[in-house]
Image (cartoon, chains in turn purple, cyan):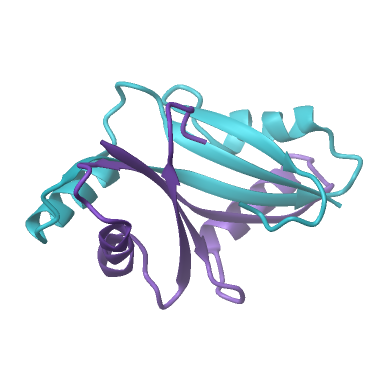
Length: 84
Length: 84
């Protein structure tokens, strides 16, 4: 079994409504030192050994991420380390 | 300025509807080797130097994550490395 972790983040310059709302809420709660907050997705995926990294990239581009407004980064987890 | 990255993941045993829907969609698209897919959140946060790591933990527990059904992990980014 292969394991991957995928980070999906909004492209530079794309407005992040969830991040902006959370930032405003935290400022209201009194966390005045907060400067920036952006929310993306973190995906943990496991698959059979015959699934190639190129196929995982395809899954991201086709369905998991929106390449128009999001960047994604795929890392394969090697060994028994805890998924970061 | 301090930078943090936060991973928020569903606790073991908690159903992840977005992950399940994405997994089913990918299986339908023909990615038969896919075994498991879980979707969490990835937050990039920057704040003033006087914000303590304990305060960032508080932000997560109070607002960014739901500690009843989610775990979170906070890492401080040291130096000029790219945010992972």
